[in-house]
Length: 142
Image 1 (tube, helix red, strand yellow):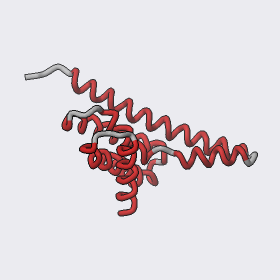
Image 2 (cartoon, one colour; image 1 turned 135 degrees about the vertical axis):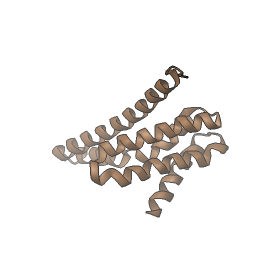
Image 3 (cartoon, helix red, strand yellow; image 1 turned 90 degrees about the horizontal axis):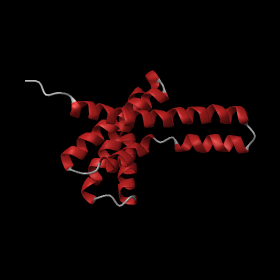
Image 4 (spheres, one colour; image 1 turned 45 degrees about the vertical axis):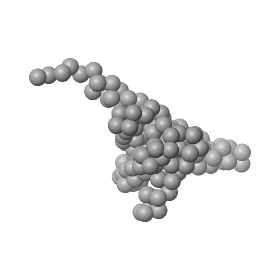
């Protein structure tokens, strides 16, 4: 389990360096990526890959909004780095490989699953932004 913690943290933090984000956000971006990945790993076996990705990307989006407010940094810095561990790059590669090998039935199955996961990532980030906007615009009650 510690391998999941460390590799997801360093994967997210490495993209902060790659994108020339502020150095002060390095740790926080790594933390966002690590927490999203750990949630994904814990619930993937129970609810499936796409719903687990949706939940993890929603968590990443909420943490991004929170950290952006706290550290007065654009949300995009945290969201790009935080979502990297969830991106299904290996699955997309496998789908294309099967397609090139003329194994079309397997390629379509893996490709569809890849698209579902990518859609879940997008939906989670959008949903977190919608929730953030709803919380900002709600009327103040006394």
